[in-house]
Image (cartoon, rainbow, N blue to C red; front, side, top):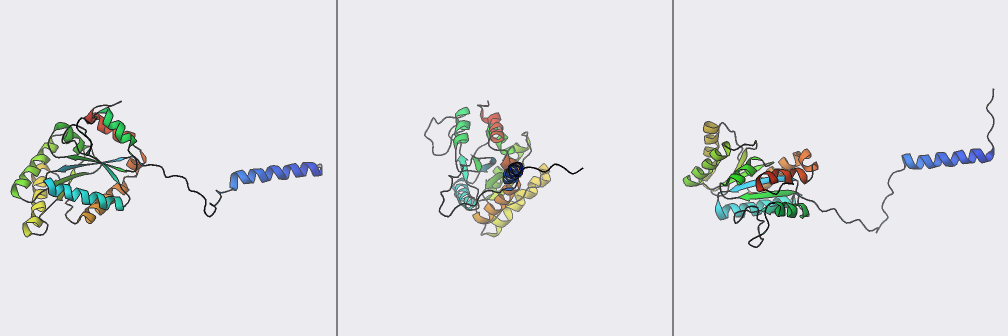
Length: 243
């Protein structure tokens, strides 16, 4: 039996429905018109935690500043917390800046940063915990014998602290001397012999150190896609102010 023929009006209605469906399922986004105004970029918030124990004083501060500039040039701007004056005080803040939940709120609001750099210069328990719970931890030290002893002392304290991140050894000075080149190797050998830790050594220019750090950060897809809340949760456990 032959199907009944549709009227011209029915055929036209069916054609319009098919055209509408094809536009919904198969159309792509329209190409932007020349000169069209672009939407404002979405501000980034820190999602990767990089703690740094600076045992090298001004030399370490200078190296970190250069590494941060090189890291930003590679697409990883950072927001620094320097809690040496009060727990959880952001560098540049006046005395009495909020800690705990106040600091976590500030980090949540901070724009245009993908890395939270937690800078520690002492051995407070909360700092040790952060150093062991970062995505990558940097240990900056000098090349003098006393500097190596202090760095190894910190490694021993970290070995007693719960957490799983092992630090990267970053010599902050002395790279131009024979002993300066040997010193970080000796520290790495001591860590392997007495602590059972095989620690990488990043000895080089700030750009080379930033390149090594950026390579690590770019492999942390899950961390970067997790957003800021997992990072704030980790910090809240040691800084207080958890929600």
